[in-house]
Length: 180
Image (cartoon, rainbow, N blue to C red):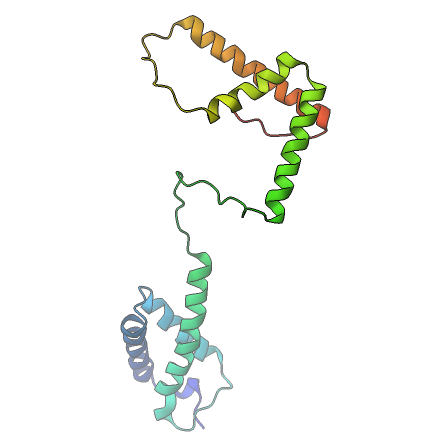
């Protein structure tokens, strides 16, 4: 009985061309030549695989091609990447789900402890930006109207807010990532 070692080079070339046509037309794959090479390699490695007769070689190639096509498709799906749109926010937890309830409870505990631990001035330094973000946006002032003093004040507020958030995180025993 013939095996893959006894097949003529012309039959291998014909099988390769047929497999490229098979992968490119039937499966519309851009890597049709690579898949054809992988199919023939899988067949070449199997020295123990015997055919009924030499004419069955092409049918066996297509049988192997079907398996290689599935493996190639799975591999392409696994390694395919899609660019994420940076304007999209992370998916929120479903309302009433366990994760959303836990997040709400945690936030309420942090707010309660923060208000108890920190003095009013420090607490307002942390909370004021959150309250301002929830208000409707006011029309922006022109950049020419901002003075250097306003920029310095804004920077000192940002630094103070950062320090107070770190102080709260130390009190609570967490290393929270500070926003803003």
